Amino acid sequence: MKLKWKPKKLTLVIIPDANQSVVRFRVPHLFAYIAGASFSLLLLITLITYALHAQTTKKANALQAKLSGANQQWNATLTSKDKAIEQLQNEVIQLSQQAEQMKTQVEEMKKFENDLKSIAGLDANETGKAVASTTVNSDNKSTEEQTPPIAISGIGGSPNPASQEAIMHLGEQTSASFTALNSEVKELQTSLTETKQKVADKQHLLAITPTLYPTNIKIVTSTFGYRTDPFTHRPSFHSGIDFGARENDAVYATADGKVVSTGKDIYHGNNIVIEHSKGLRTWYMHLNKILVNNGDNVVKGSTIGLVGSTGRSTGPHLHYEVLKNGESIDPKPYLKANRKDD
Ligand SMILES: [Zn+2]
Image (cartoon, rainbow, N blue to C red):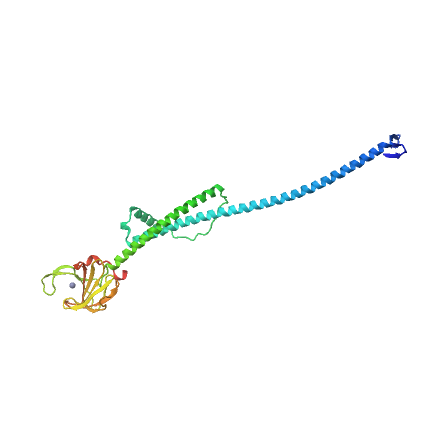
């Protein structure tokens, strides 16, 4: 296409091919101006459109970048939240395991308390529940004896993720377990305090009760009751027990108490009286030597004198008496414990 300029009109020549004839159009001059202006306008519109497009693209890119950043931040937040939830779930599992361990410990403490009661001989006064509990515990004990403990540390298994509902349920169960344990521990504290007091009472009662043999040799040469008097050979009442001990064998206090009398006379020889409690006194006669003083506090099993044959005696022995509210009673029912056992 070619434009030819003429003063008034413009000739537009089209040359299609070498073998074809040239086509000419003659157009008015004004047409050229209009065409030029149109072209310029089109160019201007194109430029403006391009500029607007470029600006829009820039804005869109900026928005996209911003959105991408926000998305990343959101993902990071989500990941962090997921981790926090996982950690909380693991803590719930750990707490549930701790609750189980505490249950076992509380059960062991209950068993310990029952054993303590059993040792202290407190079971007789307990309820059927306590007896049943003891029976169960003794069964457990026999099971434990049959299967010696083995050190176990390995764990494994296929991965089986816990559902959120399961963890929620576990959390509720754990919370209930801790509430129950709290109440059980409080009950146990009360019960243990009572048991401690009962054991202490029992211990005190045992300490002040003359249950020990007063000599190592337990051969009884004369019992409590009526007998033929060894000197007069006439019927008489023997108010104690004679132990056929050897000269200078140790004589032991048969219970905790206070020495209320030491002395010597022609009948009892060297003798000691100890006051215990609940109206009980013990009397040790025919001693070769007295090793305590009047007013001394003595503990059960301590040596208070040596066996002899002083006073009205046919040979070395210990005449031992138990007095209840001033009256001689048979010491035999009291004699239960070997000195070494106490
Ligand atoms: Zn006697």
